[in-house]
View 1 (tube, rainbow, N blue to C red):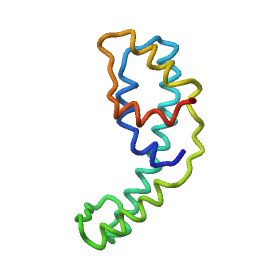
View 2 (spheres, helix red, strand yellow):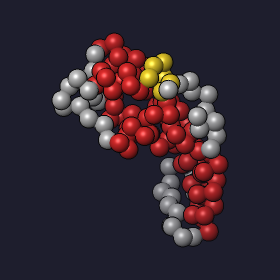
View 3 (tube, one colour):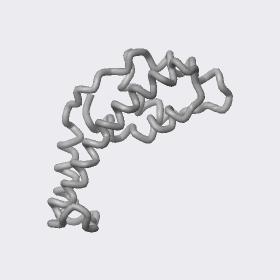
Length: 125
């Protein structure tokens, strides 16, 4: 799976990790979420470093890139290359159907179609 899958799914993982589920399943999700968060942090640090490099600013200084500028085009191009990098993160040890069955038992739990589509790549078919 690509780093982009991880980067784009962090909010969906946060939503999933806040849902009520059996403690055993919750612990498995917690352990996997820690792996996701670590990979996300790598991508985020690379993103921030890229912004500083393109804008000529130092770490800790405010930096921004305006849409539609040459800097923005360079940023998008180079950040997409970062996101296309293959991650060595293994798939979750289970299926998304298993997770849905566990969280679906509580009426207060819900995931959107968008969340499910972002999470699907992490689970075995």
